[in-house]
Length: 168
Image (tube, rainbow, N blue to C red; front, side, top):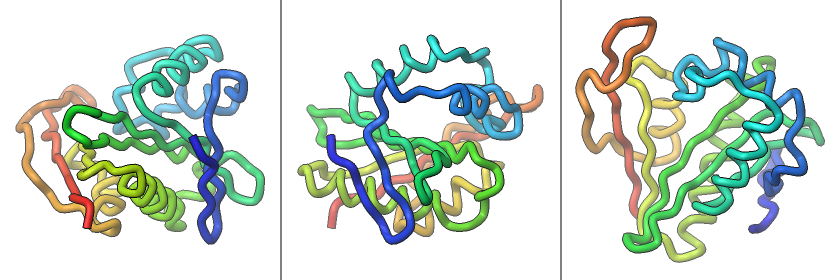
């Protein structure tokens, strides 16, 4: 699993050994995980170490760094039989939201997916998650469908919107 470099970011392989309390704090911040299924879990360093180990068994996961500071994580879960990857991202450091780092990291991992021979990248998000929907569209993904009323957000039904992009 390589380190990936972009113009402004470094994506380093995330291992259970480099889990920090800051990462756990992101996962326990209701604003950070508002649109994530992680919002249902109370996280600890141990639960995060277990998750990182699981994520590495099923794909790859990186810590996103800006100037040597952790700002988030990005992962891809690989379906080897179908040569696809399902991606996910969390920008935990709220002070950098809205600066394009998610799209930059996303593009880099999509490029990596295609470079290792995957034929398609996919993701899904809640309809009201404008940030993630923007990342998907800015990185060339297209809406592929929805699952109406799939999630409950603040007790209200919320659609799942699915995006995809084939290798070009």
